[in-house]
Length: 470
View 1 (cartoon, rainbow, N blue to C red):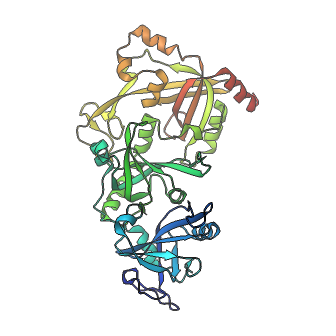
View 2: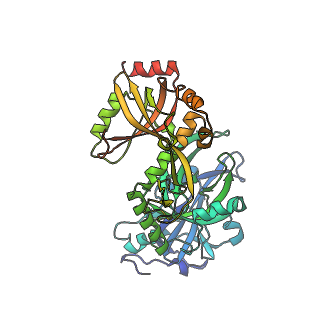
View 3: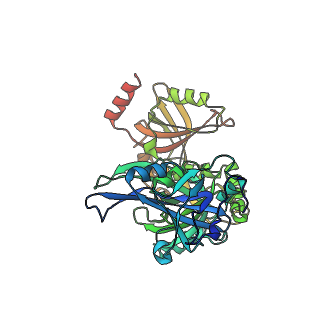
C-alpha cells in the first residue's frame, strides 16, 4: 500500500512478524475499548490499567493493539485519539496471539499477531494532515466481514430465542438515538448506557445497546434516518423485560458507518425513500415508543404551543412539550369507521380498503395484499385558559394506553360503556405529552400528535402553572 509520506517508511500490517525490528505502522482506528483497571498482582493494593484498539492499513488487513501501564499514562494515551482517527504507532512489540483466548474478547483479525504498546519504548500519535492518506480514511467504510454475511433484523426476530447469546453481524439503519444515561455501580465505578433503535426493510424498530463510552461517542456521530451500519460481532440476547430480542455492542464489535457496499447502498436507498414518504413518522405516531418521554421537560400553555410552532415554521424538526389541558373533544360514541382504521402491519400506513393493499410506495408490501392491523385513529381537542388545539392525533398504542383498552376490547363495548369511557376524560384536566410539526396542508397549520395522555395530578398542575406565572 502506498502512502503520501516521504519522511518515514512504514511496515504494512500484513508484513509484521515478531522479528520485525523497530516497526512503524500507520493506519486508521476502526475499533477501541474503554480504559479498565485490574488489581496488580505484583503490587498488592494497586491497579494496572489497560485499553485496546484495532488499526487497519488496507482493505484486507488489520490488527489488535493493547497497552498496559500506569493510570495516568493509559488514560492520556486513550484520550489522544478516537475511532476514525489516523495514527502512527512507533516501535510496538509484535507478539504471536493466542487466537482462541484473544478472539473471545477482541475483534477477530486476519493477522497471526498482535501489537503491544509500552510507555517506555513505544509511541502512538495522530497523523499530520499529509500523513492522513485519503485511502486510509476510505477504509472506515469497508466492513471487516463479508458484506453479504449478515442477519437482517427480520431474520433475528424470526429466529427468536434460538439466537440468544450468539454473536452475529447485522446490516441496519439508525432510526433514533437515545440520550446517554450515566450511573455509578455498587463498587463505585462510573458507567454509562445508550440505546439506539435500528430498522431495515423487514423490521421497523430493533434495540441496540451500547455500554462502552467509546461506542457511545461513536453513536453521537450518527444521523438518525440517514446512517446505515454494518455491525460485525454484536451479541444477540432475549430481553425478558421487553419480551424481545436485542443487540449489544461488546468488546469484539467493529462498527462500519455507511459501508461502501452494494447491500448497504440498497438499504440506504430504501431508507431515503421510506423517510421521504413519511413512513417513520407514521410508525412513530402509531407506536408512541420512539420518543423518550423523560427527555421532554418543557411545559407550555396552548397559546405558547402555537407561538412556538409559528416560530418553527421554516424548520422540519418537531417541537416536543408538555401541556396541562382539558380534553374538550373526544367522540368515542361516534361510528366505528370514524374511530378505527386498518393499517399495514409493517409500515403502519393506512391501507386501501378495497384492494387491501398498502398505499405507502416505499413499503415492501406496496401494491400487494398485506397483513392488516386495526388501530385507534382518534381526533381530540385540548383546551386551557389560553386557547384550544383542535384535531390532535391520538392513535395506535398511545390511544390504547390512554383509554385502558385495546381496539378489540373497544369494539365489544356497549354504547353506554363507550359513553362512560368518554366521560372519564372529557372535560378533565390531563397531563399531555405532545409532538408538534408544521403542516401547511392542514387547516390549523399544525400537526399535533399525542405521545402520552393521563389524568393530571392537581398538585403537579398547580406547581407547573405557578412556574409559568399563571
